[in-house]
Length: 238
Image (cartoon, rainbow, N blue to C red; front, top):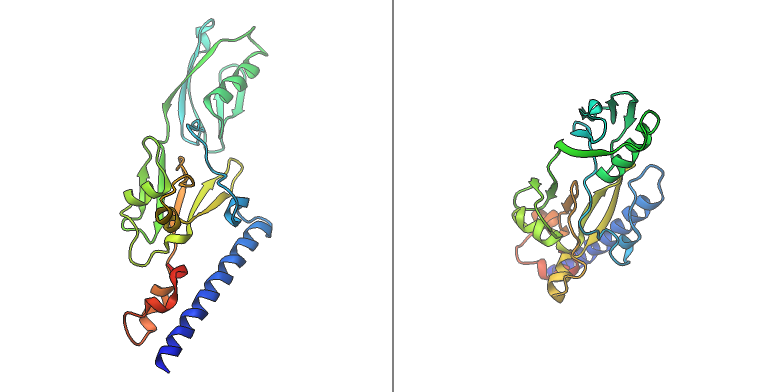
């Protein structure tokens, strides 16, 4: 009877976890105001891959403007808390979220009202260093500098690796969207490593949040009568 009760408990937990994951995915894609979730999170191919992304301006950043033909307009400006900058001669301009090439075009358009064919060079002066955040069931949750190319599995390793409560098969990569909210992608790290196929090991980008959830067994372990019963819960629990 003891063997049968533990097996049934494991089966019920597995069913509950599957249903809960499906419910969360469904609500994330249908509820108004919910962070957007990519189609890939429901089982499609990777959608978050982007090599060498450009830096997007954030509030508090500052940069130098060099006008090659009209140096009297040279200036250093800072992105204000509302996302605007104050510019000599043309007033305020919203710049938050723009890349340097996009900002250059916006500035040329703005200054074309008072200058003929303005030549403008932009140099970032003070800006937020690229970073990613690792949270959940990793050895050392926290904020880490992002230097060079980095994948999900490498980011987990930098954050201390998985702990004994982590669910390797449902790691979530949240990526901030320019207009607010997040795009989410489920990464089955357990399968990637087992198959020795890292083609879907997503690249980390600045501002990404990596979340490793807790596995079902660690949630119910304190209530189990004996140790060593994880074998009854099946491979899908971790």
